[in-house]
Each structure stands twice: as C-alpha cells, then as structure tokens.
Length: 345
Image 1 (spheres, helix red, strand yellow):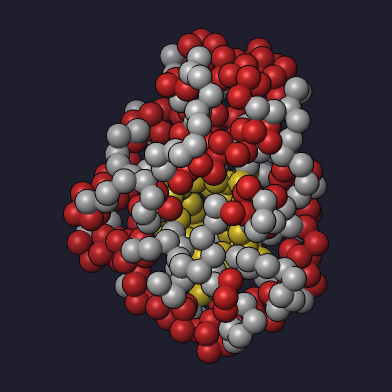
Image 2 (cartoon, rainbow, N blue to C red; image 1 turned 30 degrees about the horizontal axis):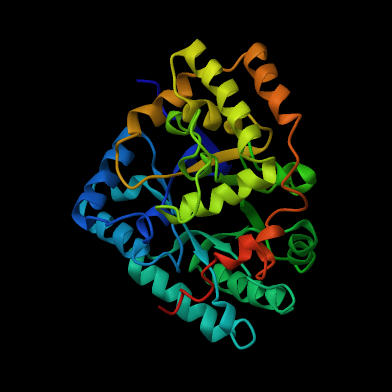
C-alpha cells in the first residue's frame, strides 16, 4: 500500500496530507458509535493519517479525540490535532479575553492535552469589528504556551490582512477548495503564498457528491439525508448546475477508469496537486474508505487527465467572490443553513 504523504507546516511539525475531518462525527450525518469511532481513529493513525481536524463547536468531537488519546496511549503521541476557536454569533459583541481563555481551556481539557497544536480562528460576522482584538487574545495564549500555532478558517483577504497587520502570526488558513469551488484562486492562494500561510482544504469531495452513485443520476431535491449534501448541492448550483456537474463527473469517471481508481480519488488528487495546497481534509465517519484514501498517493494525473478535467472547468459559472463570501450572507441560501450558536451548547 502506498504510504500517506506528509508535509512540514513549520520546523519539527509534520502533518499527513490527508487530514481526518471531524465535522461528520458532530451530528447530522447519522448515529455515531463512540467506541467504534475511537477504534477507527486508531486505524487511521496506523495507516498514516495522523492529523485530525475538529472544533470547539463540533459537538462531542474534541471529547472523542481526547478519549482516543486515553484509550491508545501508544498512538496518541503520533497525532496532530487541529481544532478551532469559533465564538458564537451571539457572543461576538461581548466576548473578551476571559471568554477566549475559558474556551481554549475547555478544548485543552476535552482533548486531554497540555498545549493545542493548532487553533484556527473563525469570526461569523465582520460587521462586528472585533476580530483583531479577539485574535490578539489568542496570540497572548500562544505566548503563554497554551497554543503552539494560530490559524484562521473561512477568512477573506481583507480581514486576513488586518490580522497580519496587527501582528497575529497566522500559520495556516483552512478554506473550502475543490473542483467545484475555486474561490481560493481568486487571489487568496497568491496572498497566502506571499505571506507563508499554508492552505488546509475542506470540501474536496463535495460532501460525497464526487462519487459514482451521482453519475447519471437525476438532480436531487431537498430535503437531503445529511448536512453535507445540503451544503454542497448549493455549491454545485453556483458552479453551473446539475448538468454541468454531470459533465464534470463524466470527465472524472473517464480519468478514474484510465487509472483503475474512483471519481473521489481523482477529485482529491487534483486538489493535492494544486499549488500551495498543503493538505485535504476528508470527512470520515468510519474506515470504509480508508484503503481508497491511501491509494490516492499512488495516483499520478498526467496532462491528458488534466486537460480533460480543465475542459469542463472552463465552462464553470462560479462560485463568485472571495472565500466564504456567499456563506456570510445569513439571509441567502448558503447562510440560512448555518448553525451559528453551537459553542456554548
């Protein structure tokens, strides 16, 4: 089996280029067997996927990873844990340094850790102009040793620039980036490259839409069976609609059959080949696709493959704008599906 590739984000800190996502374990994607989920984590680590993504507002996920660390003490030192600090929308006006430290201390307790490897900061509403102030409280905790590195998630260039200007040492940016969402290429990739900020990319599999079951299928209608399908069907609509997405699936299927792999493996390989993409975050509720994930690193797309895919991508209509701009409109279709006040729950 091909080894999982790794990359150095900073000296003495190496991550797997596939990151095990935690959002799917937080609810809205079916029942979670906690004992099985912990055992699955061990299998991911043993396979070489040692980097886990979670968040303070992913219900129960930090605790699961902490329980894994306790259940598998020999494997625990091998993992890297990337969590997030996401103040509730309702707390943006009032949160302060004490609030920030309380949430970070809670993450440390849940994860059973002495220091957080990486904390990625998200701010729901930039109209509440306090994100720099709050990020500087995170920096204070980093200087005190509670956090190793600070990142951001779902920032646009203007507001990320404000953090950098204020002296917040942003190491990574977690953002949505896939074959159907090229918004990072509207300036963010170049911006992050110029400032030495690595990209950790989610949405690479479009919530499961990059799969053979959708090739030739009729356009699905709401309600969907899980939150991921709800979210990424909206991105497909922005990309150019179901018919154009079918053309993309057909192109990916042709490439996949040339190499004896799956549509999803091609989609992830395409992303990992993008300049400045350090890693792809792949949501997983089980080890069902673990072998396929490992096989991605034995796949090499050639020029014929890339041309076939790009011929379809050239027809795209969107999504428009900077990263996460559509999602910040709380009255629009992307914003209406968000859950804004999960941290204190």
